[in-house]
Amino acid sequence: MATAKFQALRGTRDILSPESERQRALVNTFAEQCHLAGYGHIMSPIFEDLGVFLRVGESTDVVTKEMYDFEDKDGRRIALRPELTASVVRAFVQHNPPNLPWKAWYEGPQFRHERPQAGRYRQFSQVGIEVLGSDDPHVDVEVIALGWRFYESLGMQQVTLLLNSLGDESCRPQYFTALETYLRDRAADLTEAARETLEKNPLRVLDSKREQDAAVIAEAPLMVDHLSAETAEHFAAVRSGLEALGIPYEISPKLVRGLDYYTRTTFEFASTALENAQNAVGGGGRYDGLAESLGGKPTPGIGFALGVDRILLACDAEDTFPAPSTVPDVFVVDLTGGGEAVVVTDRLRQAGISADRGFDGRSMKAQMKVANRAGSPWAVIIGENELAEGNVTVRDMHGETGQTLISSADLVTELSSRLGR
Ligand code: HAM
Image (cartoon, rainbow, N blue to C red; front, side, top):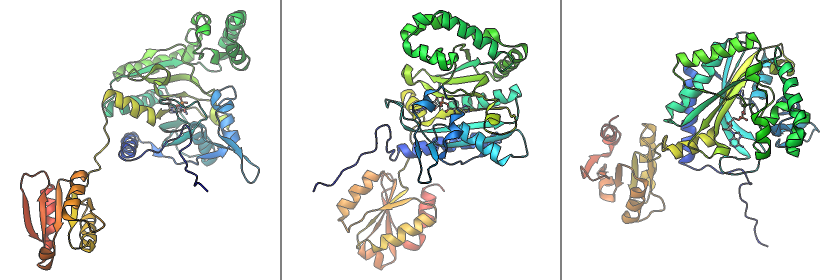
């Protein structure tokens, strides 16, 4: 019987070294910046009660079409998280932290059953932040600036910040009515899919990328023209804060985002280095009603999530943020059978010197070939005669200083000094 050979499922992928190291370096950079800005790390479960995510928006594709939901062995409806905002707000409501605003950062995999293509996966990774308990527009500015500076720190220069305000309960209902009336008047010109969306959430019709809908959308009333005085003032304060920091933005009045919980400030980071369809490298906004809809006290909130996989594609396109080196400091070649290399590599590693070695008792030539391939600047060669006299040879693999016989006891000190440590 033939043995089954498996592959990673469609839309998922194995990320091997050094790309995996690059991803980790990206998360570390993000973590450092969050730490500098007073955000604590939150680690929440990868799966939650389905109800948590239904609050994300029952008229969105993320919830209605793309959720990995299932019944577990206890008959509960469970979902793999499609995003982290709902989980973080659920955690906030559950733990009711005393000091507000509460600022949290996160990283990890998300799951959406989308049609896989370049930059769009069924399992993908995000880094993000959420701030709960303040509707000060300076919080909006802090959040957006953290995202912007993060892209800058990766060396990305082709990121555009798209900004919009989606209003709140003081003005959104009136705008909704105006938009719905307009779209119903023009329903005959819309695609069937847009007409279906109109029944669920008129706002989301503005998100249609279909050509036929474009003409209708172009003339649709805009939320930014219907903001209440208070919401307009909040939006103006966000804009002037960004200006004070020299962060450029484009007002994008039709930016509605793919999730239903947003109010007031919404934004997206688009990379002009990527194909249009998958050029969003991050997005976020305010969700002042989400905590309440998850059973908590009314609590304003804002945050963003950045797509790690897409950011790295954009970094490739911009030729920035390369994978960190995985080259070991030292390669140990043992010509005495390999047992001595066990001890030597252990000593080096304990001293913080990264060390790899040859295995399988291979010849000097074969082991040197592996050492060359590893790219280490230094090799330690252990020969029978040297070993008997308590010595080892240190070889400069880049050839500048040749090779030196030293006492085994001095190996760590000698290599540390050659490595400049
Ligand atoms: P989102 O716009 O759905 O927002 O996702 C944020 C980012 O995740 C996107 O801009 C994109 O870079 C990446 N992303 C989304 N779907 C995929 C996919 N299938 N494959 C690869 N990357 C993807 C949210 O998730 C909100 N929770 C953001 C937020 C936080 N709003 C407030 N707080």
